[in-house]
Amino acid sequence: MPNYEKDTATATVSPDRPSAVKNDGHPVGHEFVRFVPLDRALHATMVVSFLSLALTGMSLKFSYTPWARALSRLLGGFETAGYIHRFAAVIMFCVFVTHLVSLRNLKNRKYKSWLKMILGPNSMLPGAKDGREFIQTMKWFLGKGPRPQYGRWTYWEKFDYFAVFWGIFIIGSTGLTLWFPITFTRILPGWFINLATIIHSDEALLATGFIFTVHFFNTHLRPEKFPMDVVVFTGQMPLAELKRDKPMEYAALVQSGELKSRMVEPHPAVVVKMIRAFAWVALSIGFSIVIGIIYAMIFAYR
Image 1 (spheres, rainbow, N blue to C red):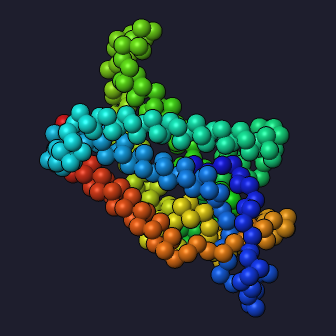
Image 2: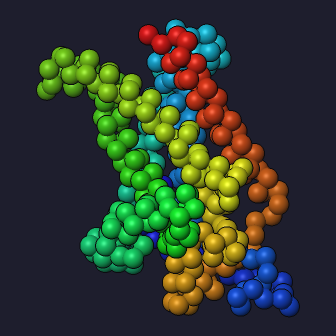
Image 3: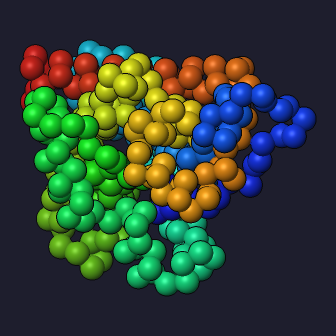
């Protein structure tokens, strides 16, 4: 989950590796730092947590299908899958709380007030500009207009960001209710457990389907990103990609003079290969879950 605005990267261009050829005043091959290490670590942890929740949750939801039974045996049985599910949920809560703390720290350090942070030019809060960019994007898709001049965050990135808040509140709260039914029924009526079961199951199915289809398409399967975009894991992107994908952000960085301090050398090739391997595993698991859900819905739904 990205912060509202990243701090300027502390890494700088190494003076021991000069380049005679410059690109916008920067050595050729150097990359722009988009995400700081904390954001990269939180997103990677969230990926592992969400995949664990999806695998165990969908195997329980569709336990009457052959693929779910096979998956549960691989995980050690349905009871073990439940333990894994709850452990992954705790990890997800920890990621969410850590992100909130990082937002508070960023506010204290850079903005001094929540109002300036939330209403600033790089805010994750949706606004009228996002509505205009959505319409412009639809026109662009249909060949009726140019590609929108996106800034730091696009409307679909903001939607994905706040979808996590919704998921934590709805799926997380109902999951806790099912985990500790006796505790919650001391203050809630017994029928709320049945309601929580339905909400938790169906909202989790919706979240899983959305992440592994819409989010995967927006992030990885768009023509300019296909087959994979690993910037959230590497934290870096080529300058040409920044200028193409985020022209308004690029212009703002140039105008403020901040761009130079956020240009660094690329990661070693072996690091990028390891990151891509992790991403490919995550993509493969996600698409496999979608196939399993479609199969269950069409041929075996109860």
